[in-house]
Image 1 (cartoon, one colour):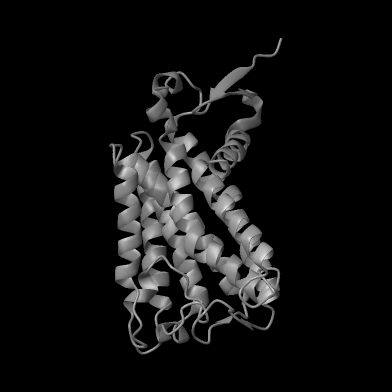
Image 2 (cartoon, rainbow, N blue to C red; image 1 turned 135 degrees about the horizontal axis):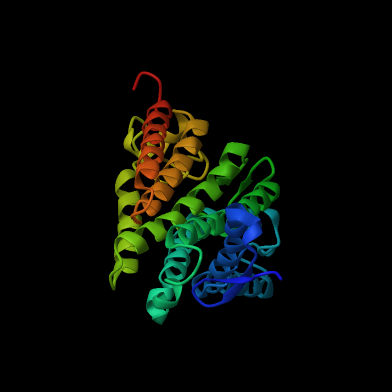
Length: 296
């Protein structure tokens, strides 16, 4: 006779075989969480706006008579969605997924689940990686392919060349989306109060803006959870100095530290996660220093 246990996520019962082990459970839950995030109203709203823009632009043939189906305009739209909008929307979608059980009043059902809150949170973080972050990578690669060696953005009032992309540029896009999603879980777990979504969202946007600068010698923009793509940043000359690769490592370090902060919200095995959090914090500080311009 085989015994089957049911693992509960926020809305559904999932069949689970104990012989799979923890990695198997996390993998199954991560796929479920990725689907929940990608089907969130926030993500669907963004997709609807993009489809609407595409439809209107193709119907009017665009301002330059070629519409978004021209490579330059398509590259500009994909870059704008991936860099500017996808991170904040992923923050909202992930926060909604993390708080869905509390908002629906089903937290009591999760107490009896064989998978604890920490593993469900780790699965949610993995869901951000295999869901929104993977989609952001696809968007960045499509934008890079459309941009080629670089095209002037048709909607810009100044000479803005979209591209060319490097592999570091491409990888920074899913890195900021991953960080935004993990931050959504951090806010949901450490600020489990009404209004935390708005508070976290506004804090994320204003904090990033406060760190950015147009000064060529500014150092603080390197510590912003933002891309350091030179052509995207326009007149932000700070991107011409420093290490793009170390900035990518810094962004990933922030995500790792965020995962440790989420895990520390639960009482069990805190020593292990404190040690891992210390390693992650050391990585953030080290890469944050290494990314700075030499002689700064």
